[in-house]
Image (cartoon, rainbow, N blue to C red):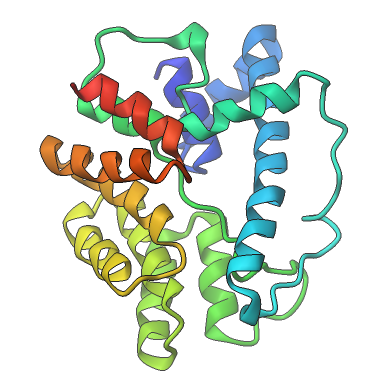
Length: 242
């Protein structure tokens, strides 16, 4: 497994046992690799906090409460503020020293896809999981996507929170079931879900994964035109697809 894919898989919690050993060995022996991983950890923590604040404003009626760990202020290097823009290009595209000029749709997908953070239902670790939503989002955060899918489907029956559809679609993408993820994402967007710009990005990636290039480009152009979420990543990806 190349280094770019290895780091992507690490942040997606999808490394196998042997791959995890390879990752840990590189962290010990490859200073450039370790530095990049550490940088991305800082970057993602910073991004997650800002993203959570934005979603909190969008979904104010959800009464989102952040725990001390999630709101911890990290000591970020001075150049991090400028470099943080790179995260919007998608996990993988920021790794310039891994650039591959002969890339296919699967590689483009892997470079740009990362599961969306749980920013709507923060889990306080150590507390008893007293309801299905807690259990569903815990499974989601832990990368137990088969269990998360089962619980999200149950939530769809018992609750009406539209964002459950969005997260169920992300789970399906993680399970490489893009055929079922696409209609969920489309339905969420058509219903004017508050995370519809995020859903548009993942819809574009699902079409990309299925080699539906024109459909992917259509969704990416919407993001570019909106000049908002993932606009820079969408423009970069469009250039690769042209």
